[in-house]
Length: 263
Image (cartoon, rainbow, N blue to C red; front, side, top):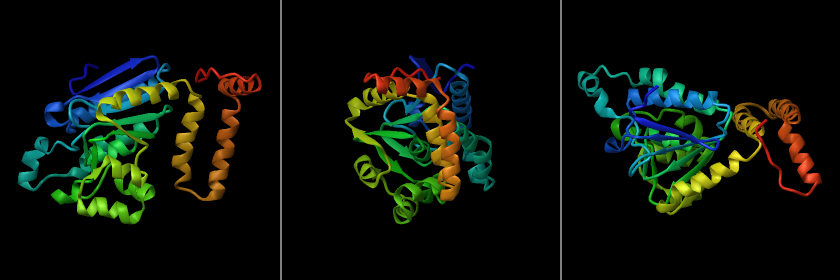
């Protein structure tokens, strides 16, 4: 597939997906979402890919939904943003969350609306010091979507989640770090280097264990302690049968650094 709105690159096991609509502040229209879904599925099917880095071109991560693309429907009163969630936004998020590789989001500038949701669903969110996060939905008479109402109360608590969603004010990167929303803040000029360094570290790690960790956390957030213990038991059985586990133990006993292969 030839991409017009994104760039997908893969080098050394690190896949980088860049939303490439800088003139629209990387606004998400249906064509862009379709390309992003295709790219995420390509990463899923690529046996050499061990990390996904998601970022935006130009001066922003993503301004969220490109409202100009549905202008006619809005003016006629026939807009159905819920349908677009069902057909485009939600499948992208579900496929991204189901990946068997860690996801790093490198947030440059604004991450607003659906762009905010997309950014915060990274396993590791690295933000430039001039970045900000904005739940902009209420500002235009909509409700948060793309998983925001599920994720934010779990990450920052009910009060702060409601503050973001109902007041619709920018949360600077520094405050996002203070609130525990993100992993790290770095100078803007160092953002992609920081993301690349973390991607390299994860790319050299036990890929199968990482996959079970990220899926196990998601499952256990929804279930009881007893269910979580069963999930951990199942995952530990699978992890202990990988070549990476054998390498990890051998390296530990030999007092050397392990060389994981993701197998």
